[in-house]
Length: 417
Image 1: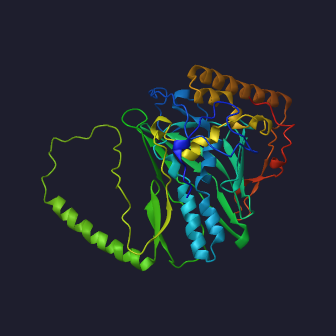
Image 2 (image 1 turned 135 degrees about the vertical axis):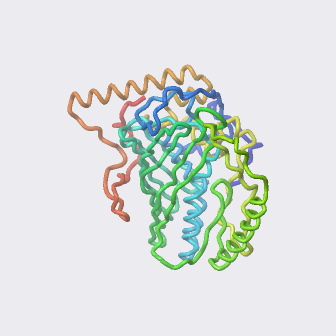
Image 3 (image 1 turned 180 degrees about the horizontal axis):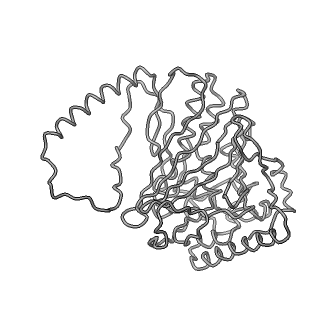
């Protein structure tokens, strides 16, 4: 677990405050500006409307690109390092499962929409303290596809995938289905795990309090047909594991308790005949304060505490806050396509919403003009760091890392900003 001491926080807005390494990782900031407003989605009245081609007002955004949102997978990278060290394959499977769930934990109460990446946009993160480096690229605009690749600095893992976020508007909610396969390779054990992300839904975008939920099946492939271990918990809090016999016994006792509670409720007063259904906001589910732990269970993962002022910073975690920092000297090592250099996101983070909105419109028009020029010249967009291919384990279409990014030859990078 990484203990982030917010009492030593510093802002990254002042250049030259602290020395930077290859990616400015010696210290990381723990706060960010926030300037948000709530507006009605009046122009989205058609249910099941596809949102990927709609330009959204900047007030719906948080000051991060979707490429940076993907990077939040790495907040709990210690789970991968732990899996690499574990001798037993069942224990490794537990750690990988915990890592897959931990990736969505940072989205709790995050109702802001990340900026859509521009075609050719990139993001890198090197964290020597956490033992990994990460690179992502927007490889397609329609449909929007983001490809990423990460590796352990001690050559213990490779983590890669491509994500196509399918967005739909359902009247009162917005649903994001992150299509694409995620692959984790534990190099020491010659093992590979694949899974898909759950669907994310933001409720009450018209009226009521915004709240977020994750649902769907996250299947981490394992070729054993025997129940060996049961994992349970909450994606917003923690995961525990226990043997199947203890879990089944607990569920039976819990089921008997539910029958008793239901019997008491059935003896209560009946619902009044005058009650009628009305179209109101979706109720926020009542969450338990803690997960009820089955005796003998083993803790697999627990969410990191958020900064005290997280609610004023788009509900960012401490890891998330550090993603957009740009220290003195970093621009010399980054490619010109990196998210940190994107003027609309930087303007929003600095609190200049008018500038951010103007820059967002300018960048989108520049992207459209570049697309028209390619159509006129009958040329195709060439990706820089990834190429289309088949996933080596599932055989499904994927985007694979071409290599050489960290050689830092950025002379042929496109001008997208």
